[in-house]
Length: 369
Ligand SMILES: [Fe+2]
Image (tube, rainbow, N blue to C red; front, top):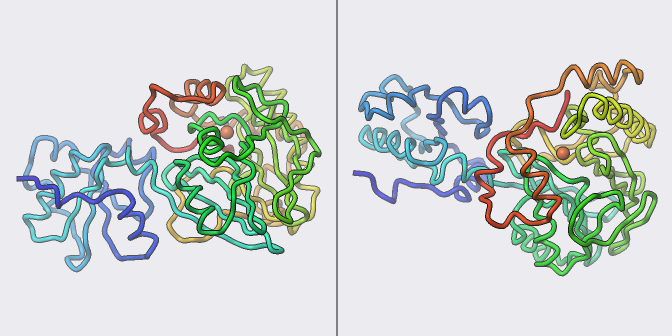
């Protein structure tokens, strides 16, 4: 008999992981689904088919630490309930992740730093590797690339004594639904976007070179086309760059989405020049990207690197223009699921009638490494 008390919700499990509470997480999805995305630190039990037919011995081969609580995970929280029920019979303190990976899609954690009195909070949507930022000075802040419910950012703003003055996106995203417009409404912040952005809703246009001021801080707008034509980087003095999908800590943005070969070649060249512009800045500047290609761990460590470190570690940043174009175009990863629908909805500025968990399922695939 399956009972409700065997379920654990996403925020509780996220808190356990943030608190470094020991737990065994068992992923019972088929291997192909797990390869797409998974919870950091989880282990795979390749027993999906056996659970489906209610095999009571499906988990007999599993060697588990009896002292630790166990959380079972599947795609939507049904098969994991069967696994939890079996382990409960064996005497384990076991829970099934309610809603499965579909719900885990929205699990988040944060990491923060302060540079010259400007606080940077990296808000990480773990499963998809989406990184958004709250940058605050005195009592004002800007939010860049909101990917979570507006309340997440409103709560963080309140905890830090900030009013959100501006919200923006580094580009029209294709792999998740931007929450920036919703956040603008909820916070009454000014919604700014580079003037090249081809969106169908109204916003306050900003130009290359323009200065965005909040508190005592200033962000400079730098147009860095390539991944998309409107891609924008925000520069915090000589300290930090918020690079969107132009430059990651493990690669660069793919130039091919919604593009034929000619267009992708053109964008790849633009990306090369945009990257050069950034890489020629102060080598000690921190690069804060919009994504990580894998799930973000619950470790409170910022996903960030200095320009100097990236130049040393990313071979593709050492290539000349022709080599770079050939390299990027020959290493295009599989196209993200639903990217056309997501990009279209982000252009419209509304996803009414759609279910984010359905559209946004799966890992991020914006990078070429
Ligand atoms: Fe992107």
